[in-house]
Image (cartoon, rainbow, N blue to C red; front, side, top):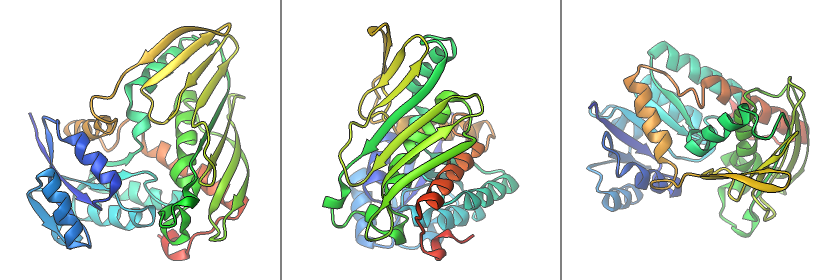
Length: 331
């Protein structure tokens, strides 16, 4: 069995979730962690028994023992760091959103293709077996013809004064961090990308999106609408409505280990697939499988999907007036 040595950039909260998920893997392990803070890197390495630490990203990328990099830094760093990893010949799994805008993603896709390297957006929901099983049932007509999808996702992050979501210079706001789930899960279940997007929103004092209210129309005539907020606590649920019934994805719908199917207001089927660890393990194993198969992305979250989700978010940000600093939007 081929084995893979991982390097981690950014040993923050999300990297801790990643480290716990990869621990039971039979073919992958974290060999190194890099952080601008030597103390954070050392603490992370000690916690997860990681052999190597780096305070310089370039030095880690020059390590010939490392096969693939997991990028877990704030959004504004993703593009440059992923570009740096690909240029160094490393496969990359990048936390969502892979970049701040669609044009940046297109540049990375072209670079990954030119070097025959994996570039995978770590949108964990897409990789969960519950969601794939649900899509199969929907395609088989378990609730008839899908008419529309409704979802909401929100947490009162304004109470956390140090939250990165509050800061424009870190590509903050509710859309890129939260609304992306509504967009990507809807597109996955409908298996198409929207052709019309309309949105309203409320900006914070820092000029990032506090609330977003969006409607998406698809070429098939179906709809999806969502609310995302970093100023309010919402139900964090999704409902898929068809001609003969509906499906509920309970809170938190993006952590999709359960789905409930209703017809005539009666529960007729439940999909319940508990995560072996925490849900991150699916995207980790899929990334390594893709490398073994010489594939540049997983079909459940393709490059085209990453680009089109970003295009939707670019459109929404333009409509509601969110502008990040030019230096983090640049190519």
